[in-house]
Amino acid sequence: MELFQNRVLWCVTVAWFIAQFSKPFVQYLRTREWAWSWFFSAGGMPSTHSAIITAATIALGMQLGFDSPEFALSIAICMVVLYDAAGVRRQAGEHARVINAIIDDFSHGHPLKEENLKELLGHTPGEVIVGTVVGVSVAILIMLNAGG
Image 1 (cartoon, helix red, strand yellow):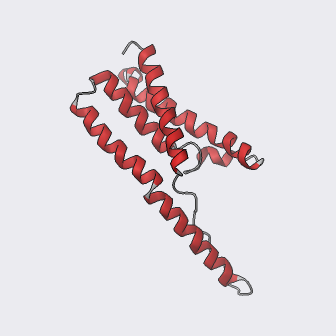
Image 2: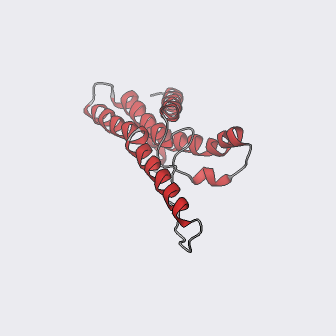
């Protein structure tokens, strides 16, 4: 089946798995609390968004050439995703944290019961950098070992 021969897709899949699977372990090291739910979470260390887009970008460059239009497009998309992961989504998470604090303050002593907003939406710059390193490393290892 041709789908299973797609090395770029393999790079993306492996980078996603490594980044997502490592989150519960990294979180445990930080908090000493175990939660498999981190495997399914957005946000956290490392950035899966960064890992998959950089894996795809590097793999495309290695397969099609770093002078190809596809690589140029992938670089543009990569820049947007990395900016979004560390910028826009991070700010949305900060806004959720502040709104949750306001709701918590308001609801003490009141019958008000509100559902908290998800605060962990984006990434710190360090999480984006580590995710990028994961993606680049996976792409280089897979593409070089696959002969491409």
